[in-house]
Length: 203
Image (cartoon, rainbow, N blue to C red; front, top):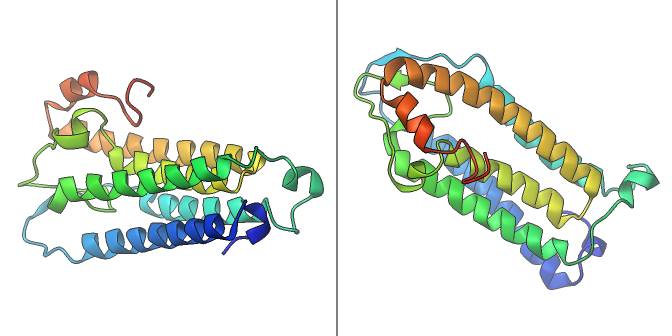
């Protein structure tokens, strides 16, 4: 996957491809992890408003646009708007960090994590681990991973498009999710005051 000429060495190229496969495998794992849970608790709210599919589309779109912008199909002026070569290593590091954050966040929530926005009667508000600092670390991980791919490919237009699309899509999802959480957890407003939404000390 990707063009070997976009990287400094064959090793760098293969590491990028391994990380890309890890990203895809991690998302497949999360998909089946959330689907395989037994439905033992009664759901009292399943308000999603299509945001699950919005995130799916954003994930696919961001990967496609990252590769499209560096392909021969892209106009020359887009294809050649690139960052210095060392950004490939920075991008790959960001991909790895993003994957780890997302997996850790999902495993911290355990049964409470779902791809749908839903609340069950036995659900509790999780505020430990990474959730002590940010309210949506799983989304932080996704955004970092997608940005990491575009940064590793060093294409400036792709980075901007991925950043804007991911921020907009995840902001829509978060708005829906937090509306439900505020409705069923009285302590959520206090939790919001003590934490950041996605990135510690930034947002």
